[in-house]
Image (cartoon, rainbow, N blue to C red; front, side):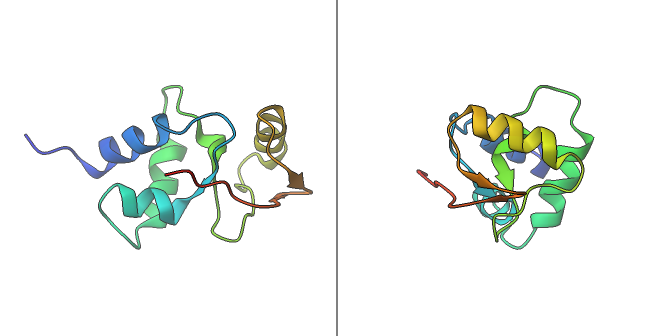
Length: 94
């Protein structure tokens, strides 16, 4: 049986290490659907499991609009430099 896009997104996001930050577009591409960044956002917004959603940001480093303060708190706790509501530099070790 073929994995759904949502399942592939979850697999990518779960594999992110603490301090590693990627964009929605990065996740979409790795999940096999380049250009489906909005779809990644929908999967993360609908997720009820414990996905490390805070490690995914906009391509320009902006934090997610749903809870940027919580995302910032979690990223800073993992050693990521955040300036206001924007990641200073994405670390993509993938």
